[in-house]
Image 1 (tube, rainbow, N blue to C red):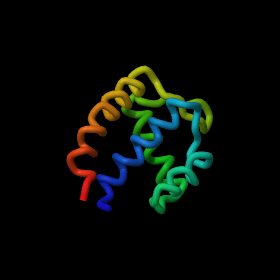
Image 2 (spheres, rainbow, N blue to C red):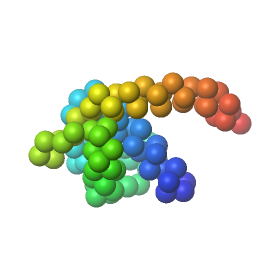
Image 3 (cartoon, rainbow, N blue to C red):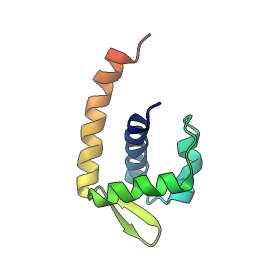
Image 4 (cartoon, rainbow, N blue to C red):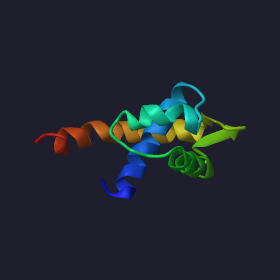
Length: 91
């Protein structure tokens, strides 16, 4: 998968889990890779930092929590995922 597409999937996944509880790169790495990715902790940290720079996550020490903006963004992504999957997810 092209890096830009992969990054967006990973960012969505990170927002989803941060919406459930605070996350760190180390803690979420195995979960992300269980979905077929092969990324490093550093790559996850880069994506978490990107989301924090966009104000979708806040950080304290090495933990990231979702912000109100992050919740709104996640809701928007989820709203668009179902119809997109229904159109392109079939073989």
